[in-house]
Amino acid sequence: MKIESWLFGAGVFFFVPVAIAYGFLTEWSEWVGVLGILLVGGLAGMIGAYLGFTGKRIGMRPEDRPDAEIHEGAGEQGHFSPWSWWPLVLGLACAGGFLGLAIGFWVTYVAGGLAVVALVGWVFEYSRGDHAH
Image 1 (cartoon, one colour):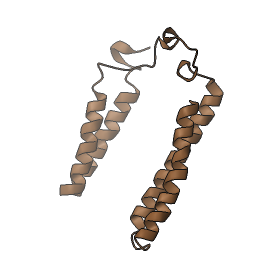
Image 2 (cartoon, helix red, strand yellow):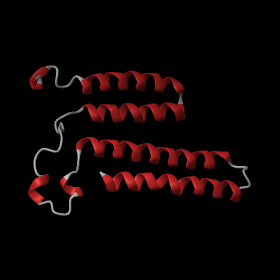
Image 3 (tube, one colour):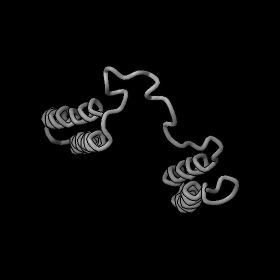
């Protein structure tokens, strides 16, 4: 993860000067853009730091070594639920939340309740039913 951490870490050294230049170009009259670019730089720094610490903790991956073979990266990469409907329900709840902000705030409360149900269902999906551990 060395390359990824350097890539995101370099974002700090790019976005902070860009934010300062943006401030000078707008004569410091448009603070949302300056703050937004500074926050993007901070986010890039946090991601770079996380990837750097994680890379030191877990060691080199096959992708990081020039002498690695293709078969070294084979195997299970994670756990995914191809039959799960909860991400769709959560996406509909988020869409309902944004719809509530646009047409009426009461819809946001309904979407928030649906989002809580979807999150609980998704988290406890493997604790009950056919796929319980």
